[in-house]
Length: 345
Image (cartoon, rainbow, N blue to C red; front, side, top):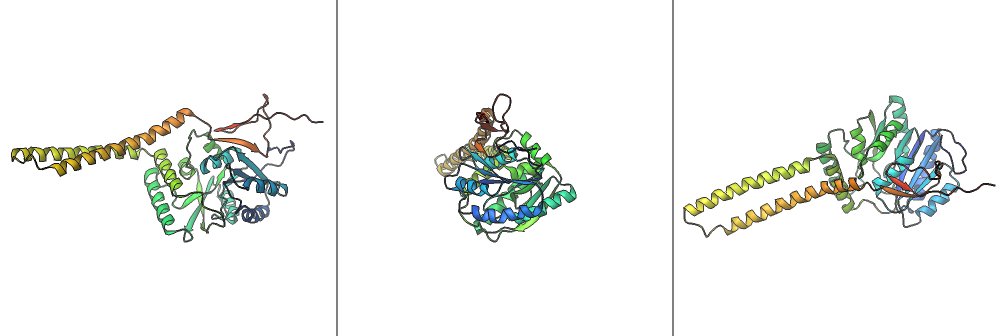
């Protein structure tokens, strides 16, 4: 059973809600006001694991204030901004509930759907319940178009098990969480990893709401990075694409060779500058694309070989019990500073 800071033993946690946060001071009061009554009405032992991903605003201060009157709130503070998926990993590693729900802090995914997820998982014995968006009219046209393109591409590369419009709002059983923790992936994309597990799953639909406050943490640059990580982490198709581009360039070169021989036979050796220039540019572009694709995969191999921790925990208000050597227990992919035992009177 989980223990608190003072060593008292609590009843077994049924539900953990993991919320990665980065500079969410504007939306945090609204999140607490909506989430807390939803969990209270469930009538089960629960915890809320708020992962502060190195915020530079008052997020940490507000979390500490809310925790004074909300004992179920647990704050895991990371030493630096490690990214959304890494913060989600930190929360999953440390959540102790029989079921774990991951939720973004922006309230675009409604916490009111959590009871439906839990009820469906219990009634049908499911390990995964996805929150699926059926209406994204609150998003911009570009956001809807890019999201649709992303999910179509992922379904083609990673398989039909990837649900369209299913983000990081989901419920996982303890078995699914333990399976994810056992995976060696360094750069994790959970919206592809979770379907890959193949565990029994269901879905709960909802309408995506506009962001309640604050600014999006997924601008265009991060969206592109997520797409690149998704493609290179779950498919070798780009490498095969490089092979086909090379084959196409070879066919073009053969055509240019035939053209050159015909021009030589007809005595037209001077004309052809345009075709030569085009051929050189085309081959050079194909080579650069192939080198870039290879570089993405080599970079992932390099990251895996380094085996650096995905995140560093500065503090966890749950204060895990130290091991025999006096060090606090560390989760997979993280490093924790040793705690010095405090003598009790």
